[in-house]
Image (cartoon, rainbow, N blue to C red):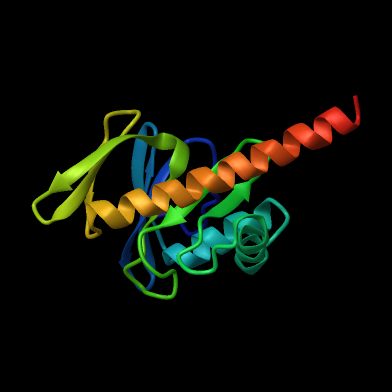
Length: 155
């Protein structure tokens, strides 16, 4: 079990196991981290120069979402995660937007299939997951438009 972990380009999902443990899925590995999901998200935001609260405020300013907000972990590589419930709850899971291949209803839950064909079932309705994906996609699109405007302003 790892003591520390920062989200990176290989991170697919962070699932809450209990108040002190998370299960991390990466492209080619799965392991446990001795931190809750909120600590991993906050530590990863800090690693890239902000904090969970700073990123949360950024999302609010960019797209007006204040509840179950998607978070930009690292903006230059578009590492964007979204929560499956309120991040205040211990059972909140975090999913990488750009790692989702497809998803569907599965036994009163939702199954997500990732681009590496890993499958996980989470306790979220299909409609709620769709809404979270749409919010995260809106955040990504808004971020990319701003980057393009900035790039064009300096060329």
